[in-house]
Image (cartoon, rainbow, N blue to C red; front, side):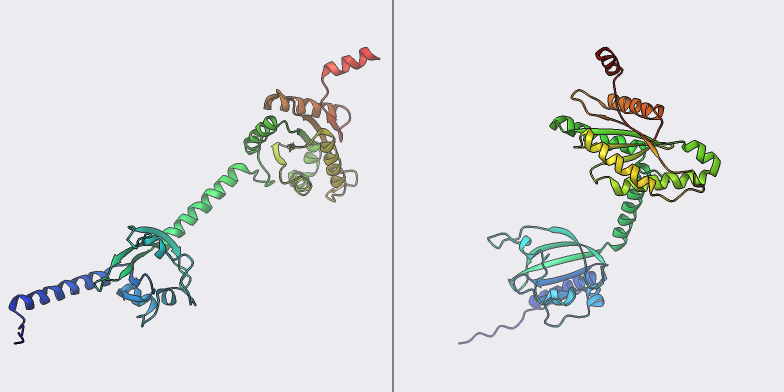
Length: 325
């Protein structure tokens, strides 16, 4: 005898409660200001889209997530997180939070992905994606502002080269590196000959052009590893790592040659020349010793007629030469 089961009042009530719960959940998900979707972890088939998603991508019809959410794709995205949501035994690993920029609308999203068991028993991916484009724009603006502020703090506003403070910040690490590895290092102090005279005679705008032209010569002559900066006024400083004195002198001679080619003078009797004082790193040197010797060499160059390259000479060297002769 076959028994016939007639739904009881309890069963009817249970069905009614389940439908009520489903409607509540659906209403809540559709009201959220976030993209929520569910897709099969193995086949990528879209199973559920909330209203926010439907408005953005339209209602999917038997499509895979990568075909709907991303532009012109016929295979899973290279950044798909499905493999991170389950372990080697097929067990859910928890929530994975990440950010990405959508290829269709170019907007940024923060995603919370996790593997869950769907009501039919299969393992699916649940993703909740919140639009963070405005936040990203603010972050970009802050990064740009910080970069500009950092650049302004490190750069001479007229010449767009390192200022004095930034030069020494970089020089400290180079000095330590050369001392640690016993590499040669040449430091050069220099200034523009008779700059104040011509600046006063032809005006500050002309003086600024002289400074700019001089800086441009160094920018195209020195190496990327060299450090050039404005020391103050018409005085500049140059650090040449891994450069012995002879090579440094060859470089400065090229600079002198390039300066003579410049056409800037309002008068035929004017040309840009520099006086150079240089010194090389000794084993027990520090920054102050190097600067002092380079400054003395610069004074020697100016005192000897300017437009010269002078290597630091100790006063004791002169005494030795006199005694020898």
